[in-house]
Length: 442
Image 1: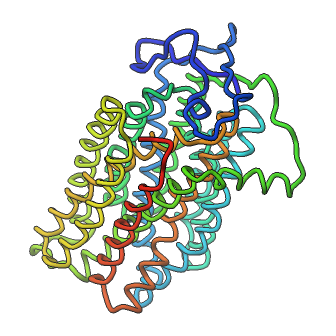
Image 2: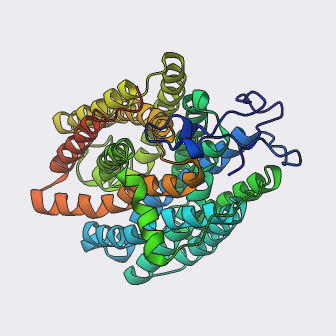
């Protein structure tokens, strides 16, 4: 795959010219010397202006959908349709849609690698998501809600796979922490915007779904128009379905990549098991001040958490680059995320939730920024960056969707939300331990 240039005054991470060898190959302990020769940027390659800012916008739009729908609109819609069984129904919808989320992300990534292009998948995923969100906003039964959410997950993960692959495509290894931090600001920016939009439109979910879908479509248009693709010089070889499956799973044979996958999956599952049920937690577990409704409380907690995410994302990414250390930031932040789950157990109050949201945001933001940089440095082959990042995104997107299913099982079987916090904390702590066996990155 040809290495792309980052040019223009809005790009703070311009690599030196000529560009270095693909970082995911160069820094991998299992790199094949035959694949490490850098491909010079083609003279007619399109100039990439403001790439990181456009990636920030795309990631913000993506997180607006995931957080706005997952935290507010979908739980509100389910509660209106099945008020007596809302926990179980939300869990079933999340569990079934997990199949679509975990399948479409790596498959779309592999197809993107084969085609040598990102933008068609970005545009197709975004506009497909707009249509799926419009459908979801107009359904009135639990079955149709489940079908609509599955379609949203399929299309959004197609969008996400192509967008995620751009960082290992075009950013040198020494700047991955900084780049991941800047792009990672999409979570606090998009998450906050998505929850605020969803909270304001909770009484009219159709409007909320359409607004969030339009944001994703607009971000895809801007990214595709302003940062055009460079076609890969040599198309990926075609293989049989069995060969494709073996190739698809080959990245997990790499020890460092496998442990990074496990750590990411456990951390994200622990985090979203709690965050995805916050609306119900605020209504059924936490003692709120008089006059403060759960949607209004969530609209306060989300900015608190997202400001903390933004701070730790930037600081963690920059320091990890400066000190050339990744594992210590990832491990410590995952451990902190596990420990702070105890706060709402000890203090199930509004103050306790504010403290929990701030500390949890600090931990999760640092983890996601530096762990993304770590993962790009253990990719087995640069030529398969989108496919392998798609495999990793199973550990990122899959747990977010599986989390409601896990949470409903914990709440139902173990007797309440106290158990949910403890299980979420345990998952994050185990995720911190999974970072230790990684050897190829310090």
